[in-house]
Image (cartoon, helix red, strand yellow):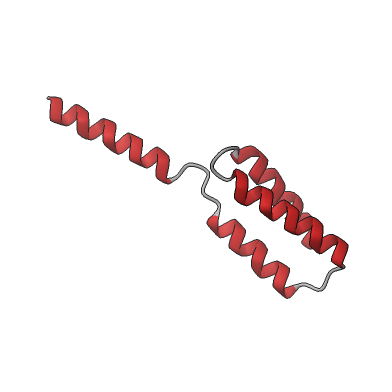
Length: 77
């Protein structure tokens, strides 16, 4: 019984930490769009700052990270 509880708790802990706020694919998408688009230096600087916010907050504050990602995408389009 103790082993079963330990295994369940361990798996829950690992699964929440592995998938918590990971935005690797979104960051790669931003990088690809930044490299392929021709936009002004001002917009590129703003998008870079938003990308840094996404990276800094992807595990701490996923809401802020996702909002920054969406704003950066809107500037790229």
